[in-house]
Length: 147
Image (cartoon, rainbow, N blue to C red; front, top):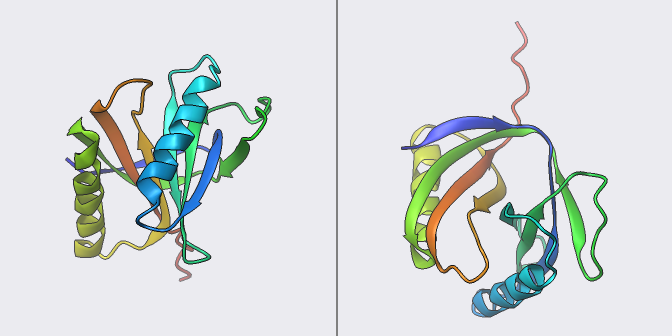
């Protein structure tokens, strides 16, 4: 099931990855190891895909945090504005996450929805390769229609 949800402003602290397509899986896995080793005392882990600006894929892998949280050495903070997202759940191996995002993209295209280029994946856990992931694609902000 795909639904539209609204999120307030979100803050994610973590490791930024910029890599080519073939280097991305190993770079993201190494970033998750650094995040999990930081032992920040949370269970709310998130991966954020950001629009590519330099020809490289950009991912922030980290954890949800309060805006005033301390940023561990070697990590960065990303503040996402409040917004609307398409959401679906994906159960199973991490390899199937791409299928979930493909369904979200197809839904957006079929319904004429514009996307912002930001994707969220909640569900990563230390030592756990399979499980439930909540996948989100941010909708582009829409200006109100003037009458």
